[in-house]
Image 1 (tube, rainbow, N blue to C red):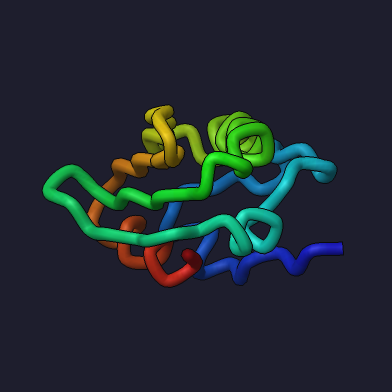
Image 2: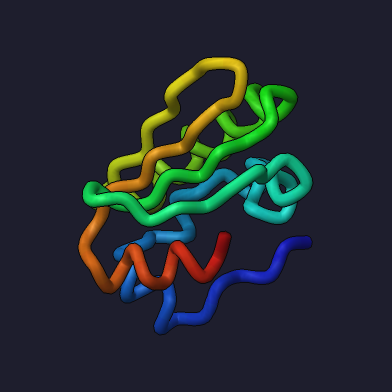
Length: 98
């Protein structure tokens, strides 16, 4: 079972963790596929190996359910890029998680 983030983290990112499907993949399942994590003017861009497409799509769908105030979008190409847009405090926490 994956550890639940601390209450402080959940409050900062505005997450209602109980809305997230328990079977959904987490960052730990995505970690082996991460190629880079960059801050952009809009937020955070996490680039993944193309083999992560299915796992990443399931992760984003789960995050949209529990962290609705954060914008999660996927850009597909040879690599897959997850774009995360949120307030500065939330981005700081999310950046640390990746």
